[in-house]
Length: 589
Image (cartoon, rainbow, N blue to C red; front, side, top):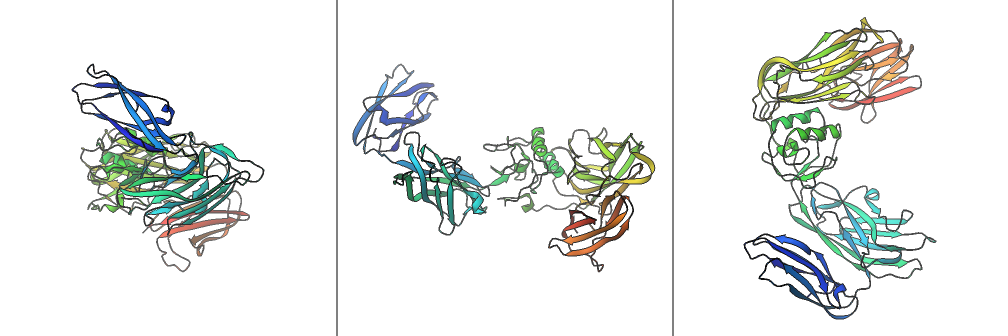
């Protein structure tokens, strides 16, 4: 077998017998044995009948001339004697170290960013006294491949030359070229060994044809040591393959770019289904390439990528709760047209139990007069948040949707943008029918704070972001007259607020009107103003002196002139003396 200079040669072993064959191919002997190296496939292994095994041998001469060595092969076949395979090669040793692009996986999905490293040296051909290096990284298929912006954050130095370096980069995407210079500073000395001198993050557009090969090559290389003496480097290339398909973000099972209670519903629709597992699947918040299932939307419901839709797929929803992504996808659930059912769903809230201070009470959510209901998700909002403390949420026995359910509650009780919110996702399982009628879907047990007395003030409880579907995944319309439903829990506060607070509006997003709460520790002048995304004033909701205590104001979606404003994002700002706070709300018509 002839092996070329600094190149690989594949040697194939085939089991032509009818029984398993145990083979050992590990030893290279001879005067020049050290210049022939088994790169892959050697060692002790077993071959099934008709199976083959590739053994890759590399010849890396240390000096000019022809060289020979022998590789020993033995097996458990009594009719086969141990075999010596003669290895021969001829070439001139390459004293220069390489500079070459590397990547973790040579198969990359569309629409997911990936890092390409530019490395210098290897363990067999290390660098000596490298101080600085410059080069061009060329890449093909520029119509599909982009360097991720901003370039300053995505074309960066590697670790080999250290952290205190002078780094220069220029990206010319039209020509498919990234020019890089990376050097240490005077007085630091050069470095030895091998490692990464630069990293570039690329992304292939969603329109890239499946199987597109992309070649990366190094050109115009210049390197020097700490004395300014030129160092020769041998440039290398690499080719990767771009594959198209579906991109799954673990937990975003409905592929709407956010993980929330609605992601429970696809689990119910596709419960128990199986399909291709994702390669290198994880629950980490990163887009992962997935081979399409049948039906295609079930691909996203396999949240953990193990090839089966079951209770384990609930875990990525909790792990990645409220996370969002904005990268364009190869496919999207929104690309699939779905017929809306003719029936509607409305929900009502019923308060029962003891709402006196330091007592527990129940918040029951009922679905009324539904037809063919299969899954439901919603958010329950309560404000002020200081006096109602949700404890548990349960589907309950004799639930309208039955007892064999997928039920996922999320309590948001910590301070922040989602405080004062209970998120619920509940669904039947694939193979079950939808339900018709009226009944309880969720019971939330809450505790009334000890600093509240019954009879005067109110805690408001409302529903928002309601989603419902039938057994085919078709959305069920929401009765909007109940969308802004507010239920009151009566209580009186024994203490005044300790500071200025601007609460989250509810519901949010809202249709037609939304309520904004705020707290004042003392009587003062108050200004509450609505702004659009350009920062223009839309309306003054309040511009007056207000008493100390807990207040709320309704915005009916109109501007200062009384005209209805357009759907979109708006901001409301509370200004009291030196206090300023702004929050976001969304109007959806």
